[in-house]
Amino acid sequence: MPSSVETLEFQAETRQLLRLVIHSIYSNKDIFLRELISNASDALDKLRLESLTGSLAEVDTSDLHISLEVDRDARTLTVRDNGIGMTRDDLVELIGTIAKSGTAGLLEKIKDSKDAATAESLIGQFGVGFYSAFMVADKVAMRTRRAGTDSGTRWESDGEGSYTIQDDQDLPVGTSVTLHLKPADSEDGLADYLSESKIRQIVKRYSDFIRWPIRMASDRTDADGETTSELDTLNSMKALWARSRSEVTEDEYNEFYQQISHDWLPPAETIHMRAEGTFEYEALLFIPSQAPFDLYSRESKSGVQLYVKRVFIMDDCEALMPNYLRFVKGVVDAHDLSLNVSRELLQHDRQIQGVRRRLVKKVLAAVKDMQAKDAERYTKVWAQFGRALKEGLIEDTDNTEALLELVSAASTHDPEKTTTLRQYVERMKDGQDTIYYLTGETRAMVENSPHMEAFTAKGFEVLILTDPIDEVWVDQVPAFDGHRLQSIAKGQIDLDETADGEKETDAHRAQREEDLAALLTWLTTALSDHIKQVRLSSRLTTSAACIVGDAHDVTPTLEKMYRAMGQQMPPTKRILELNPTHPLITSLRTAHDTNADDPALTEIAELIYGSALLAEGGDLPDPARFTRLLTEHLTRTL
Ligand code: ADP
Ligand code: MG
Image (cartoon, rainbow, N blue to C red; front, top):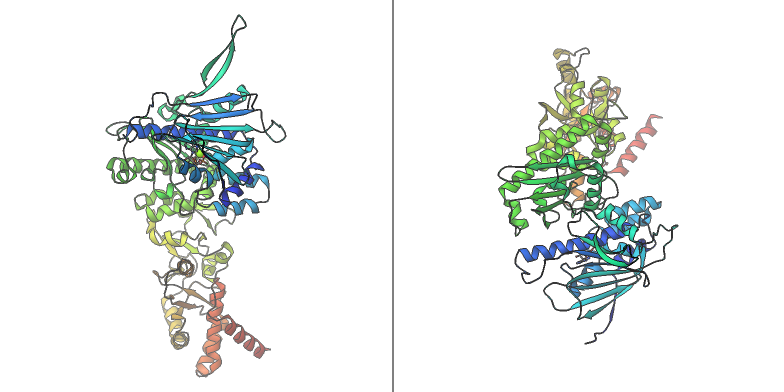
């Protein structure tokens, strides 16, 4: 029964992506074959799993394989599998649209990227999958029949704006993708993909570990000059993780990683382990060298695949890796699980929880090891994944100590280099038992903040924390190696207790507080709309005033972040600290002693508060009023 041909439009984003692919941002076009073989392999996995778990019991799975077929006359290359196949609706949904999250944002970034290399790296992180076929073909035809259904569908497109779709009664179960190849062109990086040796080379390089046979016919000429065609299996199909470490070369690890991650860079670290005993499993994990573009998007998924005795079960197995380690890629092959295991069940399985604990420890230990042995590599890994690891300080309290060992932060010790907490502790002054830090939006804002003054003057090192997530973890972590973490913009700070310099006597200090008591009381009332207290400071050397929080107050940056996320936050009133030796403060005291009712004093109080706010990078409650007061007072002094 002939069926009509229907023409459908690609979704707008797909069209854009296709345009990018066709006009070729990829210099390495060979990877199209890796993508198609990977899809075929996934389809075989799915069919095998469904047949093992009973839902497709009647399907023949005795010879699951992938075949590559070359037709020199027609200039086509076909990748065929006898896997799960697709229904007509699957085709429209899976091939006609991009379901990946972050597509629109990515396309924007690619458009804005300055050079081809950046564009390529962005698209490389995204993975173009099936569409990569259009790098080498000007027409692609897909024929597919879903297992368990009795008719199939043909799909065809030149990759421009639309595709055609049509029923076909005579298709076997599975999928074939036929590429009508563009002419080979060395300038465009288009190799001769009809060449048997080229195909062998690409398969060996990118798809050797695919667990299904990849077959291709090859012509053999015997002694009598007789040519026969026979089928060859091109890949070794060895599950790398099942071999022992000593049998695997670094190149093999790297290529395996690139296959499962679709990354084009080698990994920064490879972790290969085997657990024996009551619950046996093998794990082969990788820490990438570069973070994927969507690592911090909400939909970013775990990168660990679960196998059960060599049978692929699922991608993105979040039960095996906590969310903050979602950048880790790899494979876990557990021997004693049911093939029917669901995500739900895995989350609650005690043995899987045990595996996960062990894997987390291994990954953290690997980063720690890198820190000790290869500082440069560690620094790069931290730059890529530090933010994610810091999420661990919030969500994984079992590993707080191990994670704190990995933390690397900017510090006042050396403007060029970051420091670990361990290094900070080693440099602490005699008698210092606290790790000091200051959070803020930028390094310059933190460094120039008035809170820093006494610390700089007295030579105390302060960590400079400018990552938004720093605001959160520092509050949750009680201590590192027995040393409390203390914000220099919070609570009472008395550096004299620990400084080696001259110490102010208690009597001297008490005297000064008494002298200024009336001023402090008056200022607290005058500024009560903005702050909860005015007190004397030991943090300041050159500034007249600064604003600090109580030990448990939310920081202004965090407050801003909560508001940006749409959370209702009552404004936190903080504390104004005055520098008792600053001429502005001593003069203010004299003026207040002389005439406490002078209205100009209240204005000066407001100006002092506003300046302290500006100095730490804060926003004035009423900038116009501040400017007017400042102008008036400046005019009066001239
Ligand atoms: P990805 O593989 O990352 O999902 P692709 O663009 O490579 O993205 O493929 C899109 C989807 O199309 C696949 O997820 C799969 O559902 C379907 N698909 C592609 N090729 C095949 C195939 N040979 N057999 C069955 N389904 C396929
Ligand atoms: Mg794919």
